[in-house]
Image (cartoon, rainbow, N blue to C red; front, side, top):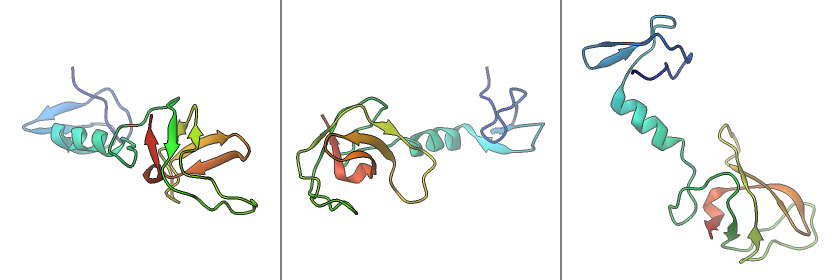
Length: 113
């Protein structure tokens, strides 16, 4: 069974030599590029561990918070994170932190517990 097209999600893909082709949108790709794209979509913590929705993480350094009187301290636990894949500002974790409320964090400043 061949994978669906990564551009339009069409199920009517076919092989043409070493390429996979979508007849609906005309997109061409290789199986290796699809595996690399899947790897690129993984969100990893500061130590390189893969993060998932619902994980608990710890903040690894003090973070200043705009509009707050105090900073988030190193070692603060953040439970039940939600990952954001389509980000433009680099903040790829959505969460609620006790005492601070809802906020977004960068995966580079957390480690998985």
